[in-house]
Length: 106
Image 1 (cartoon, rainbow, N blue to C red):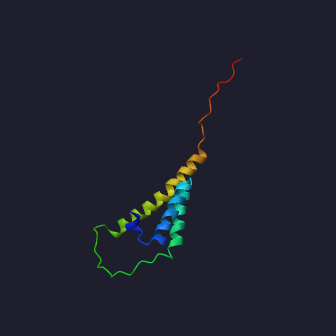
Image 2: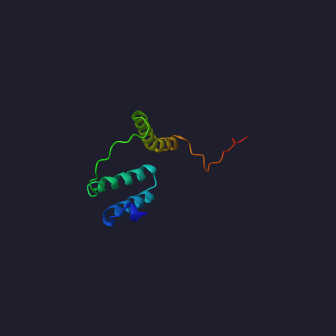
Image 3: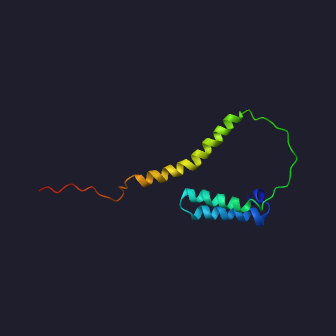
């Protein structure tokens, strides 16, 4: 798969491997997204696509407003769910490993 998606070894494959290694090494989902974004930012100036001829616009049958709404919803879920999980984990009491003790009867 890497041969078809990353035909130029020194650039794209190396950055893809670096992003994958960082994503596996970092524990948090936000860290993984940050690692992939950092590799994308590093690679942006180095990866140049050859110019292609302009194609005619072909509508796909989805209104622009619906496409933008889906993109915004995707971004909110991508960033919001990990943040909500971190916040929920920070505010909930951790009961694993604790035993309930009954009050001493005297």
